[in-house]
Length: 177
Image (cartoon, rainbow, N blue to C red; front, side, top):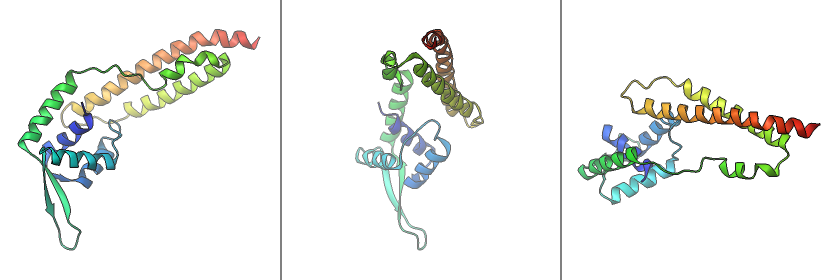
């Protein structure tokens, strides 16, 4: 399942766009929910065109260079619906970033491990503050649901880190004696 393909098709469901518009929209409006790079978006657009999910036309305004306009096809709309249903109902067993490091934390002195976990907690709290400051989207519930999910996951990480740091403090204090 490719959420990036779903994202591009979803943007084209709203209106036909040229690649630059799609990339600008993702960067300006969806940067908090997608880290898709421009090269990836263009690669996806090319793949969608080859699969018949989008039509490409060329537009030229005045002396400006010609640009390709992407429009979703009927099969692209069907693909969008298929991906949407599949992704909304799926769950992946993903190893969160940093979990491999946690497996080997015993290889560090307790005070250093504690300091690193406290730094991770600070970074988690900064991310949480950033996401909680995002204004409501106002156009349907989808973007707000995505931001809310990120907030819930970050709160869970924050709470787990706080509890874990509490378990490390006695052993870190013991090693200082």
